Image (cartoon, rainbow, N blue to C red; front, side, top):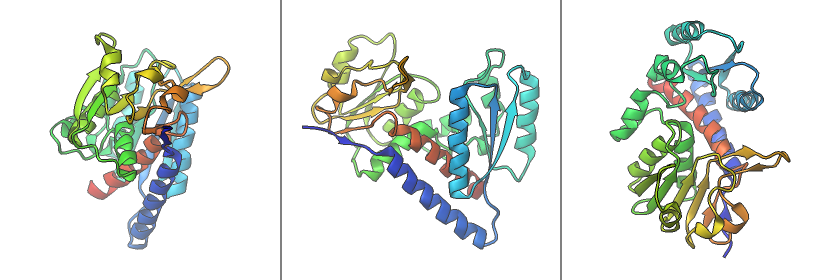
Length: 282
């Protein structure tokens, strides 16, 4: 058996087309286009690539984007001042601060400064809390992108045993909550987890977000499992790989996401959807 490769790029493109159509309808009705502010600090090459992808998605959907390119030595207070100004601007619907931040800036302080109604990344404690109590509004883009991708494929999640590898605030923890909301039975694993291979080998759904190349071996995957690889690493030879041994895992899984071209495009598409939702609701 060879797995069905999940084409996240195609699914994301369809989602972006739907968002574009809704924005056209709304502007024809007299609404302004949604506006997303993207704040980029420093010259991190990967961050620049991610920001460019988000700006391109804005252009495709008709969302207005405003980019602030700040110097690496910007102070935390200067950044907070900019965020507060964006919070107070009624023409701005979404605020995104591109990670990672310089070491002298406390990321938690910055995230908590963003108005939850404009938190289109879905990172603030308020929005994570709404997800935890089963009333989500603006949901963390990558985990929600995974759910939307599985929904598009009409994969029924209810009752499945899921394992999430990684417990970051941005991906692992909200992914746990999303799967729980979908009525999966969820185990979250991390660096102190015992018998990781055993837990993974029993899972109907494996979601990995640790950023360690080929961390999950293909022969750990149960036959017929759904494998979602969120990790992404560029090797010394410039090859981009995920957390999962793809070639071996795809011979056992029923569905598997490639890296790149799997979850990444869904993250960007869900960000666009969150920006539209923020405008409509708030």
